[in-house]
Length: 362
Image (cartoon, helix red, strand yellow):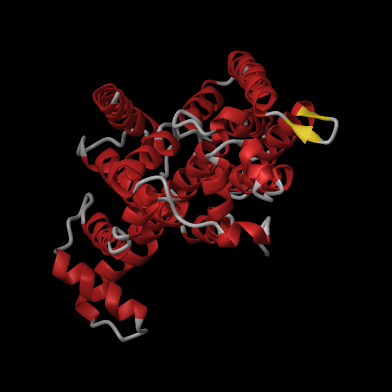
């Protein structure tokens, strides 16, 4: 996929962005932290496996080496139960953080994320309908498919309502997204209230809180292509995202096809968020907190911010999922509850810190 505008290629980096490029060494560091986090999360659980044993088993599996008979039981726990769930958490976190970064760049607002345009609430409604109607009974794929369809229908519905005369006003997009969120949320509540069976109501309730219980390799294979599909074009659009931070009129004066860029960003952010909601349910604050945190660490340049947020989101959700599994030995908490408990205070702290910095600089 080519750039939105070739003219943006010659735009020089600002002094602030030049400083950001000196922080590019942090990207490999985040990559190493992600690998370490995956190894630790795979080692810990109801049956704790020593970290060196887990690392050896993961290495053997990576290079297709034979495993001794005494460690085959541990290998079964690692490869069939824990590793796919940990990788699913990493991919969901990466998808939500990347989608949030794209939406914040598009709206030029650190409070934006993919849920702003109704993707999460639309996916939640699709999942609730699939559970309550019995459509998802007996298959681990029908529920994610219904959720993904609901997320995409919501995203494109918001876009069609907001588009006027060949253009898409970000203000209209925001207002329509708020309205859609309210509508989908009300309908989801209605579906939950009409459910006659207690078990169905319980399934819908836990789905709305988000979680990765029982996720396997099939779910990893389902979400992985969307992370790749979303990241590659986003990276190629990173320079144009930088220019959009200056405002739409300035971007158009510099030769950026603003409408084309907005459409691409909306499509790929919706795909990423929809895929995440499809296998994990509704998980909040990842798309808000992680991009904001990475922006403080790496700066506003999307050439670094996009990969940094992708890795940061994966690390964040791997640890949140581990905490959900480990905080109560005999019980598992819902992942969406953990991200809200951790993410909301952290997000408030980041906002207060940013406000203090702005007042000091003024």
